[in-house]
Picture 1 (cartoon, rainbow, N blue to C red):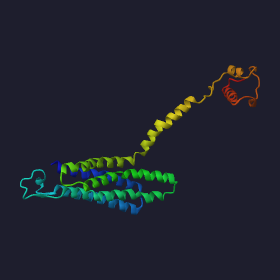
Picture 2: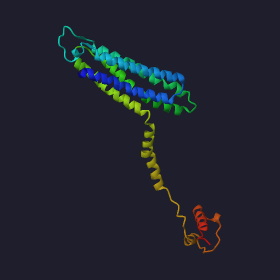
Picture 3: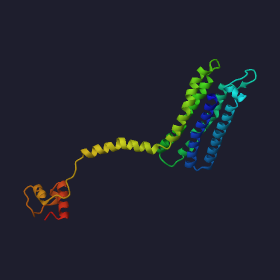
Picture 4: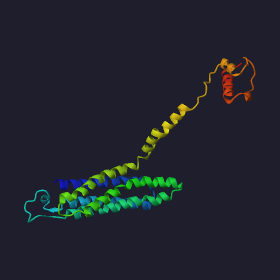
Length: 248
């Protein structure tokens, strides 16, 4: 029974993250041709998932011959390696289309090349599942029918990893603000905090006339001191004291 349930869950788990990325494209791009291509890719993904699910369910005649063969002379099943190998081929084509689709629009943006490169890299993260799809396709290509359980291990590993990679890829496109916030809090904020602690601080604004008198080098209260003869710090203290009424 597990050989029937797991592939059906796999096709659904692979299709949903790709549809999420397509939905993101539809929200970002407004070009009519790009929208039509997005709908076409989404249709291929949905039809591939439906067809592969039905083919997997009816791969044996009768159906229960897959897990409980009664008479080996009457029931027959498809070649599982060929079925699962070519079942992922439309998904690979859809991944390639999703990889190429946003690039022309991004490079036509009226902005600097660094910004365009950053946007392209952001969209490229949504297609990292392509590597897992190709690895899974290659694993089924090199498998033989001599020992199906042993030969299915590499393909099963990639089949299990592919939905998770696609889900992470679908989320990475929208996690750029979170990464920026984390980087800002971890490195930049700590740097400025240390800089603020080591930088000299100005004296308080409520400086008294007695403090000002001690700064005058022999002056007395009520004497006139030219501001250009003082340092910048002393000049600021005199201005603050005059504003607060402490300097006569």
